[in-house]
Image (cartoon, rainbow, N blue to C red; front, top):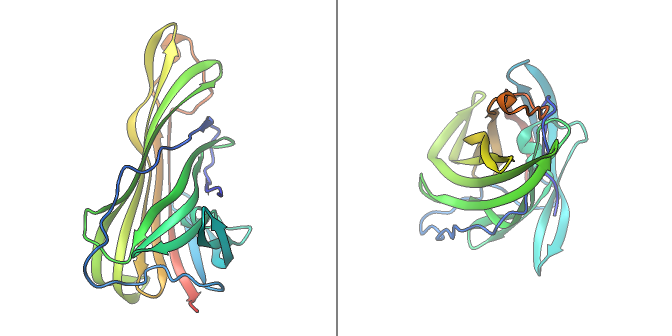
Length: 264
């Protein structure tokens, strides 16, 4: 199991989630199949990542450096360069992935870093991608809840991490290059946070989508374009005399585009 760190630039709070198994069991698609994420040791993908609010860029390298065993299954292990900042790169470098019945299944963690603290959701052999499918197909859903205490305030956090297919195209043009047979997935982290204040339940965060990441994959090539957004809005608790040291509003977006790749 590994860790996915989403880099942001504010100091927020820490909640540790232990996710429930996915309640979604997708049916293998009965149509043409495409290798959207080629799995072989030595494969690599180089990207340019741009933080949209600042136009700051970084060069990311994602690669497969071998295989690992877990629960009797063999997974391909992903790695990345130490200076990588792209959300997709950081997500993938902390996952082990295998192919099973036309689905790509991942082991690891989805972790959002809201400043210096982390929110962690385990990913236990969950479907992250399919070799084919239809728009609207839900590949996996991880639901869970966790109690925690921040700045002396008891909190209840509920969340849902969902991955679905949002586009299937015969071709897509990315940064001036056309790619045949592409599929787009959307991964969404939805959260709600309540506090217990003197025996009363007070909303800290109304239910909202905190992370949205869209990834376009091309047949026999891999992920070509990823666009991700992190955004949250908290309630003002000053009327209750509570100062949790958390900025009330935050938003950040990034765009990761393929530069070159090698598929064995």
